[in-house]
Length: 200
Image (cartoon, rainbow, N blue to C red; front, top):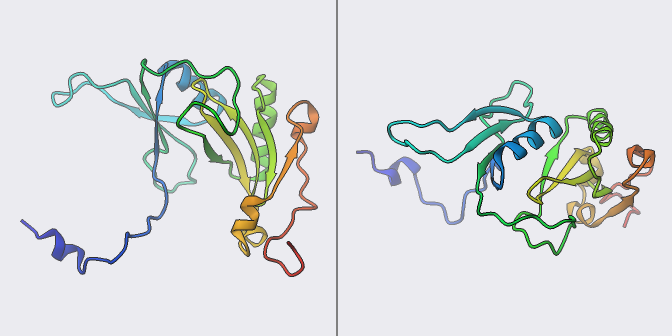
């Protein structure tokens, strides 16, 4: 048997910084209802689900979903597990103060154009826009899923906009209308540049 310590080399003095999140697993009250939300509303593709095997004859109801990674490998981004013990979600969603463990899940659209198309699609389906804001590093729409989890749909602004002072960009917000045609307007002319000379 190989010694794990020798394979790893010298033991580091601090935790290794990860490259990012690989996937998120959510407990959901009704798998079919959440499947419809993640595929028909958010546009994810189902890539797998758990099946009974000799090693696991009674698996939980669990499905796996992936976004479009432009040919790059990623087995799945999100998994849903049916858990009928979950309580009913609150009637209205709010960014803060909700009696629910997941505040929100942020999903990146591939471009500003794709993001605007998704907003128009959601509005055409009657999906409630809970919050529509410009952040210092993204332009964002918040909706919620059938379990009360917040979902942020965003596109990233160029790194030169927010890279000079990430903290300042995180603290900047511009609330926007969340109903009607005004909720589909995306102004890009007056985005602040954080960390630029003369910019607070």
